[in-house]
Length: 623
Image (cartoon, rainbow, N blue to C red; front, side):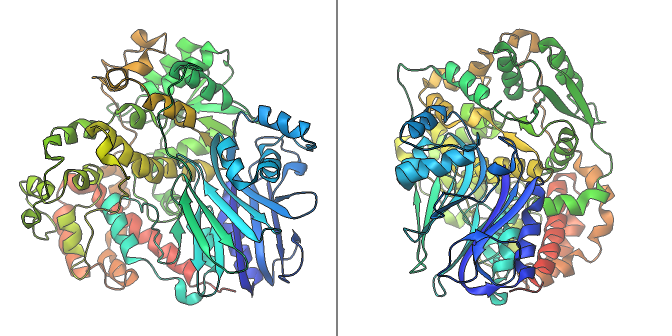
């Protein structure tokens, strides 16, 4: 797991700009840092000790998990220097393919998955490489003989990749983070994206392909790029879809065990984020059933008993014979607010980010890898919003009634919710089930901007699926990669901690999709998962109320109340008038007296801090 960045242009970049790219990704890879590149476009790529004047380069900050020796550092090159790899992630189960490569004459110098990817590309090419990668990755390969740069993001979207491309100049740059690409951009291409800001207000995050900057794009999960070094052209395509996998080779239960076991592979200590919920508990149970008992578990503990599940999680760990560390969440996060917002890279307003950040900070003191239960709700329809939206599934084939859309208002009447839903198609209304600031409020706050109903990508061929499958497919393109997984990556990697999600193994996902609907979609949800947990009855998953992972928002707002002073004027200035100070003043008056608007208030405070930080970076000297 690492931080990556790079650029391919026709202008020498100042050392300060390259160093700013390095600084942006440094926390993701605390163990080693290297740069390879060229100042003369006709020269060979070589490792560079000095940054100034580079026109093309790969930057890599390493978190060493597999084979921590320097020989496995990156960027990694082929023996002849024609192929270079810059890679973030972890792939599993490649030993059989490695043996095939060795038979073909490849000699391995490390035991890292990085070298496997490099040699697999040399043997099978780009199109032959991607199908062989099982796991999570954002990778870039430079093939100097072909004159191409290839890039890809993993199938489920666990690893991030953002990029800049200017067709006119033929420039291309990429990084793990928006802040890693920003220093490369010319000064006149560093403006905030109006659509990105509205998308953030709508979704609490900015879904791919948008970012908060107009000229920086986010690569979608299961997509790949091909950049031509000679012409400067860029192509993008989808390389994978989660088609059901139903064969006699393996059951979904056996595939789950395999996915979990594979993710214990590491040369550094491995742990597990454990709640009292079914997803992480099933992973813990299956680890123990397979003999992995030396994996330490970590649980967030809150002062509020209504939110705290640390006692139940500790009991689960004791029953399974696993060590558990209770990580107390601080009552006041004001001292860490700016750092957490910075580690979120761009505007991102999920209240659970705060406990996740603290949990990761504590875990990294004793482990470098953590398994987590992300993906269970998206695989087995565990969220309440699925059932809520299915109640109106009779509208699936009816047209939207646009005239019913409520007027802009910073605090619309609750009676307008049904009218708003009816003003959209059934599919387009679904993203509003998990939204940030509502459509009427967004329209009022941005009176001169034509807002979108939502910014989620709607998959193709939805008509061929059942109603619940449609909702899961939409989440698989949006909520899962752009909210859940992005949050998990950013907040673990901010501390040099690698997170792994066994429930999102691509083969397990495909086998789950092949399950009979009656087995996969149950009431209560996820009974199939309980079936692979021998202790399920003891743990009483379905008789306890499901807990979220959010801190008390009221407490957060209380600690941050000083930030409300001057907020409307700052946001109007930062967004060049897109957000209206007058409307924001009215919203603050209305919302601060209504507890139901607590998360929206937090969303504005995070936007203010994030845009302020990014503006400073955007105005910094550039090459």
